[in-house]
Every structure is written in C-alpha cells, then in structure tokens.
Amino acid sequence: MAPSVGPFRCCKPGRPLSEFVDFFWSYHRYAPPHARERLLPTAAGELVFSLDANGRARCGVSGARSQSVVLDTSTPFSVIAVHFKPGGAFRFFGVPGTALRDQSVALDVLWGRDAASVRDRLWERDSDGTRFKVLEEALLTAARGCFDRHPAVRYALDVFDRSGGARPVGDVMPRIGLSSRRFGELFRSEVGLSPKAFCRIRRFNEVLRRIEALTDVDWADLAVSCGYFDQAHFNHDFHACAGLTPSAYLRGRLSRSHVVASGA
Image 1 (cartoon, rainbow, N blue to C red):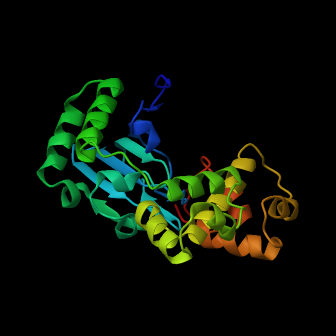
Image 2 (cartoon, helix red, strand yellow):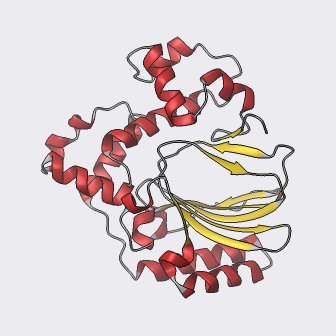
C-alpha cells in the first residue's frame, strides 16, 4: 500500500514483517488546538520515534494496553512509528509481552546503543518512504531471522479477531491441544494480555469500529449486537477501557482511538 497524502502517512510492510506489523505511520508537525488527548487501548504494541519543536528526539516502546492513556499534545511534534499487530511486538524486543503491558519503555533499555543509531538514521532521511525503510531494516535486524509464532496463539488470535472479541475463550481450547494454564502462559507471553483481557479489548474496539461514522447511537442495541450481557455491563466495560462514558467519547472523538481529554 502506498503512503497516503497529507501530514499523516502510513504504509504496510511486506513479508515476513507483515505477520507481525500492521503498518508503519508518520505524522509531521502535529499541532492540535487541545493540550491533551486520550489514547484508547487496542491490545497492540507500538514503537514510536518523536521529534519535538525544539529538535529533541525520543524513542520508546508501548506495550499492549488494557486501558486508556493521556498524551501531552500542548506543543507541536512529529512522529514516525510502527503499529504492531496484537502479539506482534514480542519478537523484536527480547522481553515477553507481559513485561511491556500498560508500559512505555525507552527504546535504549531494550536495544541498547542500537536505539540511538536507528533514531539518528531515521531523522536524517528526507522522506517517509526512506524512513519506513529504516524501520523495516531495524526490525529485521532485531528479529535475527526468527519469525515464528506459536500456532495456538496464532489460531486463538484469529478466532477472537473474526468474532469481534465475542467468542468465549473456552471455545478455542478443544482445538489447540494444550492445557488452559499452558495456553494462558503462551498467550500472555506473546500478546501481553490474558486471553480474557484481550477479548475484552477486542470487543471494545469492535464497538468503536461500528460507531465510527455515527453521531447518534442506540447504545442498548449496540451492546447486545456486540455480545454484551446488557447495557449496564457494556457501560462498565466501556468506561474501564476508555476512561470515559460512551456519550463523552462521541463528543470528544477525534478518530476511532483518539479523544480530546477533558479539561484540554
């Protein structure tokens, strides 16, 4: 896929990275009118290189998140990043996914001096295409030729994704040939979340997908169609994931996963 036009650009990698990476993306000179944004959880990790208006460069890794996080957007900045698929980040950073759950870790902690080398080469390039190439090369180097995933985790992620997070975890157990305990260990190590927590976030994101183009929502009907027991359970889960109510989300929504933070 070719990079899109405008300040936001994205590009999907080829194999073997496409098994682990959803897309590379960039946004140049992001300067919104609000001081803070709430980033909603997607159950996927991200590798982020940022450059602020004063030329200060930072790089870090965010693991799979089970709840929202508030970002400082009070000053302009540029970003080049890798958005991983669920369970895709673990192969590149030498630690299990659980070590990064709900965490943001400086890249030099994980990659040592290679982090600064990649950061410098990235910002020295003069186009997004060449910068995405730097990211691709860095990930291939970090993987050291190892691109395997446990088939039980791959299968479960596919089932959970196709059901929008509504498929019970117990439904996958007869097909994978592992004990519940062993499967849970493998899943948490690769994905960073338990199977139950992953399905919760996946179902939450299915809700966001369905209402992306809507301004008026029948929340009770949506709750049932997405597999929630009732609207009360839906409201509780939505607030736990997003940190705000469904109606507040609609009022402050900037994109599917970004919302203007209250008081911004």
